[in-house]
Length: 133
Image 1 (spheres, rainbow, N blue to C red):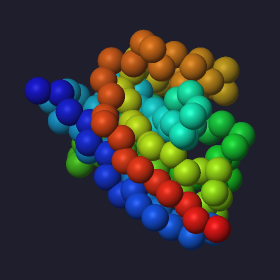
Image 2 (image 1 turned 120 degrees about the vertical axis):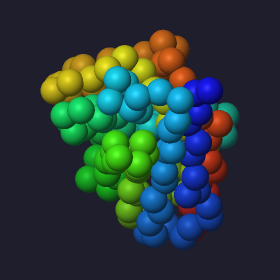
Image 3 (image 1 turned 90 degrees about the horizontal axis):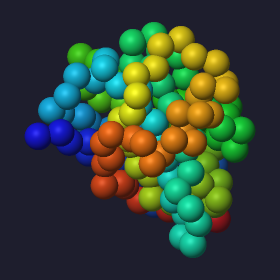
Image 4 (image 1 turned 45 degrees about the vertical axis):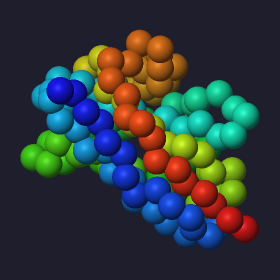
């Protein structure tokens, strides 16, 4: 059974940090690109970062660039999202998803991958991040 399970969310003050984990099972992590998405109340789900689990190439949208870091540990079948300098506008439910494989890719490909959320193969159920002022 394919599973993606997010954890690490919670309540944090603005300026603080959290590390989200996406534990995967039931498939070979290296066969998929992994993206992190988030959905704030009343807003559409948006892609914020993705990673090639074979080359380590990463991509971030501008709103999180320089603050968030995505990484993967294929030995643990887990993808992480380190979030620093959190802002109130980062409050959302955060999801990880597995999609088409990524190799070495550029910003256009990264943006396209995150924009193709309807074609992701597998999704987790999300973890809530709340940033207070």
